[in-house]
Image (cartoon, rainbow, N blue to C red):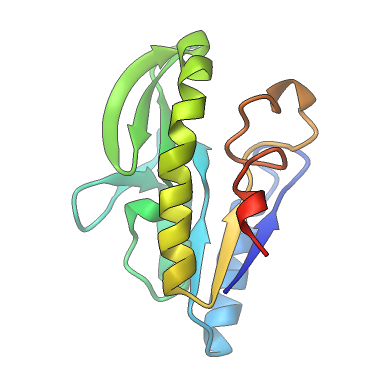
Length: 158
């Protein structure tokens, strides 16, 4: 099983659409492919078949892969409610509403569900296309990173 990570220079630069296009291209080549975004911040949620929530971009990517959207494809979804607070949705289920500082303290505990979801996708598909969040150049975010270069996720790949 292969995993490829895609990162960009910031948010809203086209990572999601690039991954969706590559999902479709790999599927057309006969590969079993799945999208994965460890952490996403969006109020645009899609509902999965089991009633969970994931980012709409990951739902679109799943459809490009010929798959039913699943909560493993976006295990941590942050749904902003205020300038400083957001709902935290883990593997499709709301677990808390927190302010930014509290979320930073929560992040180490979120790595386990992220790795569980990634492991299930890796076991079930030929290729997993991983979409980073924001920009990996934001070095102030590296401590506790669960979505980009500093993530333990990358260390699980051969």
